[in-house]
Length: 507
Ligand code: B12
Ligand code: SF4
Image (cartoon, rainbow, N blue to C red; front, side, top):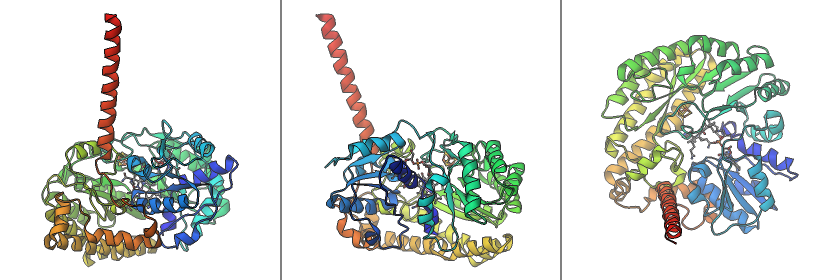
């Protein structure tokens, strides 16, 4: 499946570079291929798009390419979240990126070492190349997906909601051109008998009627299968029925918490069991209409306390047994969200290597209301409950159709369900038995436990040798330091100005 999770922006950058007259080689890394073998030999400049979990891979690649004389650029979630760290390993590190940013870099194209240059657009781009323009890059990526082929599309950027932990909490909602969307959908019908589109919008359908009109005007009803992440507030029964008519087969609403984020789930101030009841009713309504539903939860939020939030999730699973529960451990990705500043100020962010920051393999925020062992006890217990034989059987019985049943079974028994229970159980055991491991979690030492270093070494394979010295570690409070530094700089500039003005006045 991994090729189906490829992002849109690297394809966009490929298109923009070609439009600027450059020859582009595009490589997507799904985690299975021998990456070093796939890399082009003679390149002038390399753009790498990476999530934080791939930061170490990206740093090693940058070093490898720089050793061959190329200039390197990092973009994507890691660059947006940890620019202070990434500039130590790249010539350029980009945040928001539009065509002008890419043009500026291509024209400069020079090494910036030891500290790279940070460049970013003032806001998210107003338009992006559509599927037709990105097609050759989409095609080469999907060649790596043998059975299911999901085409990534984007109808909007940003989000009107303000969930404190989210990177989009401060990015204004902005729809992209509906005409491009329509053109792309009819283009896809010429490429596939029955296309499957994954919407990468953080929150699909905020301008619901416009999105539906665009789909209805572009293609016959239910001729394309769609998957979308949408907030519950948008998923009223008439909306869900319209989504079904238009081919939506899977919806991934975020519930996140039983005590917080009421706005996006239409539950307002309702919390606890009342919220569980209302949300489960809504999920059951959706499941009667749409074959596949995944509900997203964040574990370890500051509003959680004791066993109750976990028990409420269990009750929810009982009331809405058909939905697949996806759990994320609260993670503070560098400067992704303003709330991370508070966490850094409180000294609650741990320096787990980036490789583990994927919302699962390490929780880098010290829980406010749990000890680490207690927290892992709850997470393991919830995992065991959600993926017990009984829960799996109930889920399969509540699902309709072969594909949802097969998908839910595979997800439960693979690395996602069973795998995570095993991993968390191992971490829990180390917390009890390995003093150094526990001290790292308690922030009494920054010496990285061998358990983590061994995994990075194994997963990086031949790229481990290219990992620059020190690149396994980062400053978890770099965002706070950069803000404080900026504040000090502004204060110094202000006091200089005051001094100058008063000197003039005296003169
Ligand atoms: C769509 C999406 C997905 C999709 C597609 C993933 C993909 N490969 O792109 C799916 C569902 C598969 C997914 C999976 C995951 N996701 Co996700 N996802 C998103 C989401 C909602 C939107 C991203 C997006 O495409 N936005 C639209 C583009 C245009 O905007 P942008 O991402 O801000 O990019 C701008 C710049 O960063 C830059 N840029 C981006 N890429 C590149 C590349 C280059 C080369 C350059 C030069 C510039 C550049 O240009 C853009 C325009 O300004 C974001 C949340 C969000 N709202 O951003 C989370 C987010 C990116 N995901 C996140 C995570 C953690 C994950 C998972 C690890 C979750 C999990 N446990 O499975 C996996 C990892 C998947 C993987 N390794 O590929 C985190 C990443 C944090 C981080 N620092 O790493 C985010 C930020 C959500 C969060 N928790 O806050 N995700
Ligand atoms: S609704 Fe989703 S995308 Fe929007 S701010 Fe909340 S978590 Fe982020």
